[in-house]
Amino acid sequence: MKKVFALISMALVATWSVFAQDTQDAVAEAAAALSAAEDVPEVVEKPKYWNTTLLTNINFGQSWLFHWAAGGYNTVSLTGNVDAQTNYAKDKMIWNNRLQLDYGGMYSADKPIFQKTKDRIYFESKWGYETPIRHLSYSAFLDFKTQFGDNYDYKTPTDLQFANHPGDEPAAWREAAKDNLKSGLFSPAYINIGLGVLWTPAPWFSLNVAPLAGGVVIVSNPLLRNTYGMDALRYDTDGTTVLEYKAFRPELGAQIKADASWVINDAFSYTTQVAAFYNYLKPTVEPRITWDNKVFWKLAKFFALTLSTNLIYDPLVKLTDKDGNLLNAGTKNEGKGVQFKEFLEFGFTYTIAHKH
Image 1 (cartoon, one colour):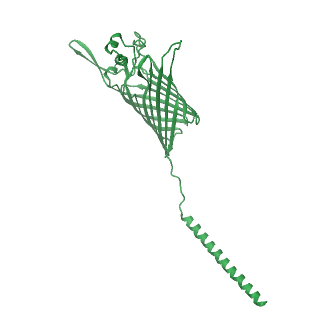
Image 2 (image 1 turned 135 degrees about the vertical axis):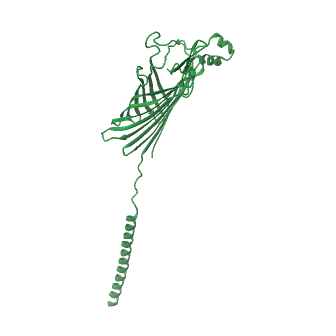
Image 3 (image 1 turned 60 degrees about the vertical axis):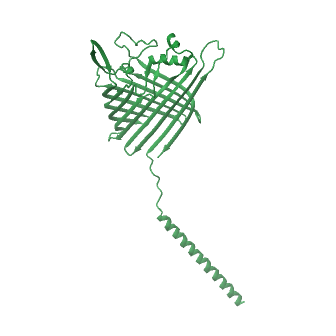
């Protein structure tokens, strides 16, 4: 019996020794793992200062009439626009950039040519650095505006123009349009820079006041320089007074620009911008005013409704009526008026957003 008890005791002691050794080994391994973990540096997410978005829209429209008693014409329209933004924010500095491209037109059976309805290039860059005053920053800006190509006011060709192009009606329309050129690439183009202060009392609103703003108006096509109020050189040739209009007009003045943007949700937003420029070099001329609006309503994942408007009042631009006569002819406001364009479009949309 004593031998059995001794054997049992020896077995228990051996088992306890093995268990104790395993426990010590486990504790040692855990301590080593904990020590190694303490040596691993904490992963810190890299700050992201850039926020980039790209919004694209393609809109298509079509109408087809067959024995339609009320009359009308078959039409096809296609327009597209790109709205790209890349904004930088770090500490007290911001730098916002935006490029808007719009282009499109339509074909109508009554005018067998492609007629442009949208044509716009607009780039703006805005820099700001916070001052000690709350919501106020030092600011500088640059903006550029023009269009892609020639735009015409299409008039019905004369009998002679039709006769010059027998069997080629589109060619007759294009010939008639040459006499009604309205704009073109760099005709006009507006380049502006300025220094001032930026007030941002709320995330959705900003007001930029630039008492020192300058730039240049460019009209590369000589046929359009008088229309856009370019300065003229006057000289005599064989007793005849000749006016030669300049391609560049420098400007120096003050500009006020207000921007507002309301994002109701991921599907609906409204942005507006109004700007006024007063030219110190032409103190008797009223300020040039522009006002742009855009309503974006995403109806489904890839389809949206867009309403956009553009308003311009430029007292140096000479406007005409549908018959080609100057507006307010014979008055002190001859040629002056408000330009307005509106688009309501439905089509395919796609957005890309990225932070880095």
